[in-house]
Amino acid sequence: MLMKQSMLVARSRAHLALAAALLALPASAAAQASAPADPRLQAVTRSLESELRDGRSARALRLSREAIEELLRSGPAATDAPTIARLLYYQAVAAADRGLVDTASWSWSLAQSLDPRLSREDLGRWGAAGTFLAARLARPPSPDGDVAPESNGRPRRPLNLFAAPAGVTTRLPQETDAPPPRYPPVLRGSGVRGAVLLQVRIDSRGRANDPMVLDSPHPLLALAAAETVAHWRYRPAEVDGEAVGVYYRVRIDFRAE
Image 1 (cartoon, one colour):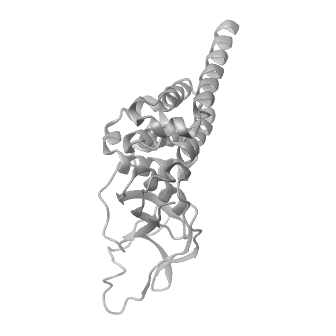
Image 2 (cartoon, helix red, strand yellow):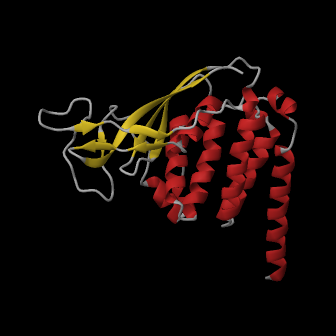
Image 3 (tube, helix red, strand yellow):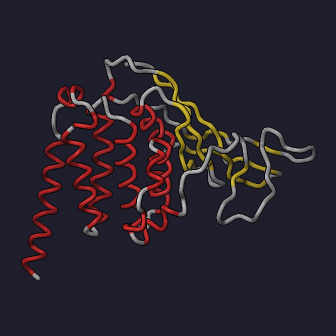
């Protein structure tokens, strides 16, 4: 038993050391690599799969977070949407296993919008975490301004804030804390620019949830936009003076640096 545990610890340390070393490669080398063949990302995804399979969700969550942050810093710049989605998927599994509901839901929604094929993953192999994600499979985008059902709210008839019937007073969500987006350092000098269009569910607390990428000139800009909106805060939408959740489209503009 002790030998088996020692082998597991050694293997875990080897995975983490390899991933850390590969993530430390210089940005210039990262920018030249194509996403599918990039050894750093291959190593990270193998490590994440192994950590989660062996029940080490805390380590997997930390590694996935570090990998996503490093991706925006140093690339590879050619990273495609399915590769980013895979990292977010593992982050969602790890967060769900740790009981971090908001992080899991956010990561899973964004992952599926970047790569809809993830909805067909065998989620049952992740136990309770997989059950949590299976209950939150991708849905089509909702009309902008639709009031969203919330688990802790009472049932309400369908209503759109832009087309409320006479006699119903509505108010759109208003930004109260919205730091500007940060252009991904890895894309500097690439000339990549443009607008990312996201749909989020702004809940009755004024927090953005369930991001969906509707349009983006580059998958790394989509990731940067979602990371930005995750920290925004709103005065929530209202219907007849009551705070409600609402589906809302957010446009994030990036200028080339």
